[in-house]
Image (cartoon, rainbow, N blue to C red):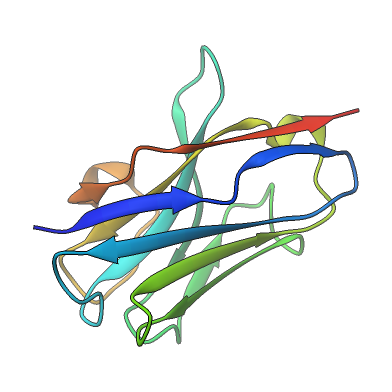
Length: 124
């Protein structure tokens, strides 16, 4: 089993930055693709970004492309989401997810493990 714990969320003004972290325990993440999703109140859980097991392949939602960067440090068993130029519409609970395969995916039902989420609020 893999346990995922997100951190780094908070309140920030529009145009600001936040860096989310997702720390894993239970197993090494070396062979796991990872992803970030978000869910705003009353809305579905949306794909944000995904990264392959080595970090060589990354995919982003169009809404965050050019502003967000997903990365990973397998030695630290941690995945990151650097969020720049934040907008009020980025406000949501952000979830880290892992899938038991090396290849990234933007489909939430293909992920096996989920964190508890961290709140990101962007004020205008």
